Image (cartoon, rainbow, N blue to C red):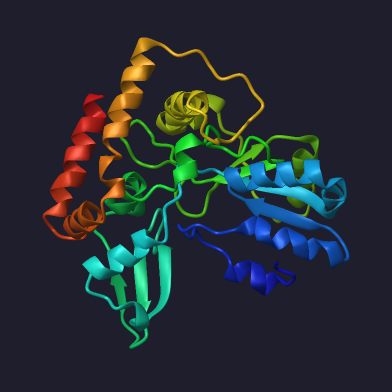
Length: 295
């Protein structure tokens, strides 16, 4: 629970690990004032449920800021990357998941003063996409919300490319989605104080840059959610009607499931991570690029 500006700045930058944000809600009982709530879509789902059970909690939340999210990963993923890079956990001073220029790399500051990168190429291509298939949180596989749809404002990376395939908004820009009147009010106020530069972009740019993630969330994960529900498993209830599915959607879901087959094997998790952080691992990344272009 950050109360000072320097505490907020300390929490800047992405941190890819499970974090029980809603465990802090109990601290609001004795808190004098209101807070800005920042969380992933799943955190906000939990917040909304908590508010439905404890109505006075709503009066403590001034605004909800949600992050765009494809998948989060288990803590063991970071430990395995350290192991594969031959870095001892006790020697680590700080882990930076988005080190350097955007989009950044996963890097480590070691206690002896040296800095090391845990993989080749960028954060998105060189590591994270593979980690989400090897170490996904179980709930992420049933999440149908990629853009914090229940927030007042959604914020995320601008994965928007130009005709040449270069990122259009690198260097400090973020995508901001205004979702509610409260969100509009806050953004307008900040803009009037010259604290924020806002540039409107076409909706289709945002959709095109996120269409793969949106498809996985809205179709692939919805199929998995529906199947689990029919089998009597406890799954999230979003209180919305799921979309209709085509035969192609079901086939795509099965192919996606195949990419997750190694997530339950500690042997293959560590083996694949060991390959990924090596020079030969670049071949996997280049192969992924080719497959993406073909599909």
